[in-house]
Each structure stands twice: as structure tokens, then as C-alpha cells.
Image (cartoon, rainbow, N blue to C red; front, side, top):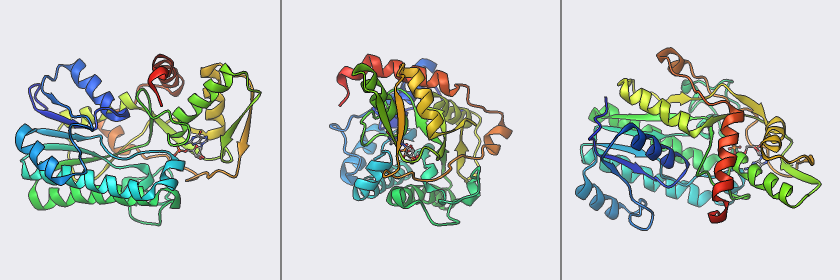
Length: 314
Ligand code: GDP
């Protein structure tokens, strides 16, 4: 169990996953959340992180911080993706160990699975094949964090949990049309097309890749379920939604959500990325957890958040 008075550091609390953790932990009555914005604490800086841990002494660390982005951002900023993620996760995992942090949650990514892993992807297929080139630097960093958690657990007896969420979406996502993931990117572009009465919107890639999408609040629910049930076996745990859809079908669904009725075309000069990316969720299924938000209602909630916040987005 996690104590309601535990000092919980949510690293990266301003992003998609961090915000969802803060919402849920506050709602559930956890009273000692430790939060730091970018300007207060640079997680890539080892000295700053050492100082922070010595001052704040967290009991639990949730690592939601890191450089994330969609297919275009991964391809364009590979150096930032590998450097920022390696620095942040290394600083946080190591200082957690030195500071006696009892529980830590680290997020790996489905990008870490081999490009042609059997579908749905089981945890043990990690590190069995070559990666999708468009996100290889990010995936290598994510795999390093997973191995770091496992190694510390083996050598030092910590309980640092690695979660592998499928593609996430929800409030506080990055709605930048170039650098974000497909759902926020399409919501913004289709909303723009509706507002400006554009006859056609171009969707990146062939439309044939399939993705499984998980509403971010369901991810948080799964993590708390695992922590509260004290489940631990020093292996990564997939979290999925069982809701797989092609990018073409997704584009139609988002059009309906937004109320855009123009034509959708497919720009095959843009990369498709991995053909398929569905996770096997047998571990969590056996523990009795299931995602509760269906894609249509999750998209509705995300679009509503976008409408209420678009004034302050980039
Ligand atoms: P991925 O799951 O790591 O490949 O990340 P993305 O969310 O960026 O892309 C998922 C799929 O959606 C890829 O096949 C993209 O080519 C496709 N896609 C279609 N339209 C868009 C868009 O507007 N933005 C993004 N990021 N991807 C898009």
C-alpha cells in the first residue's frame, strides 16, 4: 500500500502523464505531493537533482519527465531524445536509490519493442530484434532506463517498477501539429480545418498502420492498482486498452469528434512508423485490471480540454 502521507515526487508534473497523476493523487487524498517546474529544477543536471533529493527526501518517485514526441519530432531531434531521457532517468533512478526511495515508477515505451515483434507484443520480446529507425534513439534511452531499474532491483533490492504503456492521449498532451503524437496533432489540424472551412485535410502516412490508444487516466489507474496491490516481479508490465484502430479509422473518428466533414487524404511521403503496436496485457488481465475509457469518449474528453485550453497552447 502507499500511505496517504507518503512524500510522492511526481517528476514532470506539467505533462500529459504527470498532470494525470497529480489529478488522481489529489482526488484520492494524497497530501504530500512534491512538484517542481522546469524553471525550479533541471532534471538533466546531476548536481541539482542531488541537492533536490537531499532537501526533499521523497518516499516514492514517479518519473513522468522526459523528452517525448511523435514520429516527426523523434526523427528531427534524435540527439535531444537520447540525451535528455538518459540524463533525466539516470539522475532520478540513481538518486532515488541513494536516497532510500522505496518505490519508483518508470515509464518505458512501446517504441522499445522490436519493429517486427509478434503482435500483441509480450514483455519478453523486448531486446529480441532491431528497432523502428524513426525512434531508435528514444527507444535505446527507454531500454537503458528499464535495464537500470531491473539492475538496481537485482543488486540493491529496490522495487523500481517499469511500465510499458501503449500510445497515450488525453488532456495536457502536446497539441503541436509538427511535434506531437497523432491524436493531439489531428485534433488540432481537423479543428483548424473546420474553423476555416477547408475542403480537405492531409493525414500523414498511408493510414494503414494500426495503433492501440490508452486514455492517460487509465494508465494512472493501472499504476496505482499495481502499487496498491504490491505487485512486483522485476519485469516490465504492459498497460493497454485492447482498443486497436488503423490511422485511417482514427482520422474518421476524430473528424466526427471535432465535427469536420471535409475529405481526408493520405500523404505517403510522410513516415508510417511501426506497422503495428499492440501490447499483450495478460499480466494485468490476470491481476484483474482493465482500462475503463473507450476511445470515442476519451477523444471527446480530450477535444473538450483542447477547446477550453487552446488559447494558451503554442
Ligand atoms: P508512433 O506511434 O510512435 O508512430 O507516433 P505518432 O503518434 O507520431 O504516429 C502514429 C501514426 O500516425 C504514424 O503512422 C503517423 O504517420 C500517423 N499520423 C497521421 N497523421 C499524423 C499527425 O498529424 N501527427 C502525427 N504525429 N502522426 C500522424
